[in-house]
Length: 290
Image 1: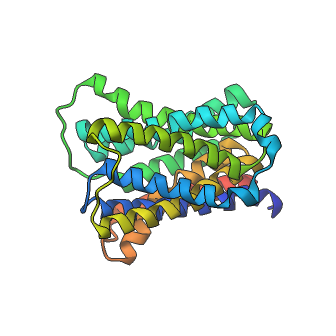
Image 2: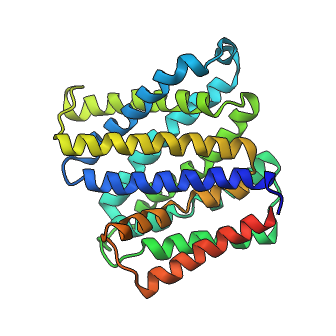
């Protein structure tokens, strides 16, 4: 294997690990406050970090580059819209079904990359992608949640999945115009945070955020994990193919499980063993292709 070609996959793995850690922290913070407050704090942390570093990273020509419009459009749909659809899906269908459908995001990303970026899907990457998707489904599946939802309710988890998949394609287009992972993260999260604050104001009637210290601190740390994850994700997309890095980024539930196992919040079962085996096998197939 060529070490240089593995760099995008390493970035993707770091992104997956960061998003996995963020997921654990977010789940713990939700025991202290509602999901909207948690999300707003985490996104605000990201924006604060990005703008604190901005004076050392920005170049004035960035703001006249058309790539900024792509990053801004990306910020409107992800994470702002995708998270709203995910919360709605969880409420109507339960976490198991919504998470399972959300696991299809790499497939939508691959389809978009083939259709709009001209990337070529090999049998090995296809098998690796299917392996990671099935593995994530196995890891996420639990027999809980409502089962009396109607078929039209599928629009929420499917919409979130399509948006997350297309996010990688749109970001790749933007990075082709303006190859700065930092600027991509700065613009997209600034737009998303502004939208999140508007929604928060509508729902809460105020922009003041009231949160207990424990929940607030967990959400801030989750935000820091998102910073690392998003920068790594954009770096992976800048240097690699969407069809290769998207499935690896989607393996974050594996890291969520491993971290939860470390803190004895999960147990190793036969189902989990096969889920881990499928995810790891899928990533190995994709990596070996490179």
